[in-house]
Length: 85
Figure 1 (cartoon, rainbow, N blue to C red):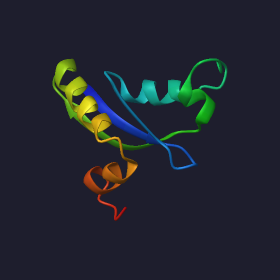
Figure 2 (cartoon, rainbow, N blue to C red):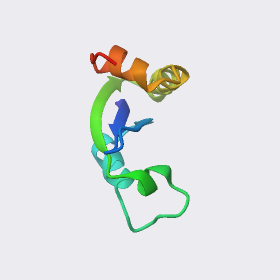
Figure 3 (cartoon, helix red, strand yellow):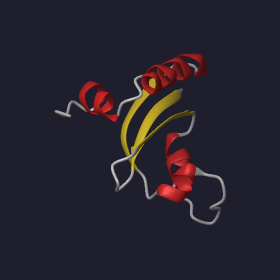
Figure 4 (cartoon, rainbow, N blue to C red):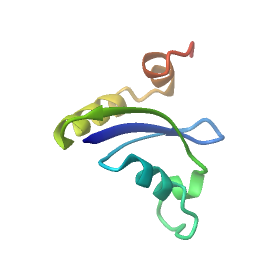
């Protein structure tokens, strides 16, 4: 099983990704022992706010790319989280 997920930080920024181990991946995004070069480590802490299961990696990657192609945090709030902008 693979997961597409969205994290949000206190500043309201989103991070979209995919993984086969959701719990472990969120923990890794919030690690502070390695700072250099990692967007999520520099901009955390992150909270998991949405996830969706997929039977294989290729479907998860396609869904991740679809969400990233929206290029708008507003669309994520409306279409996935059901919020009003």
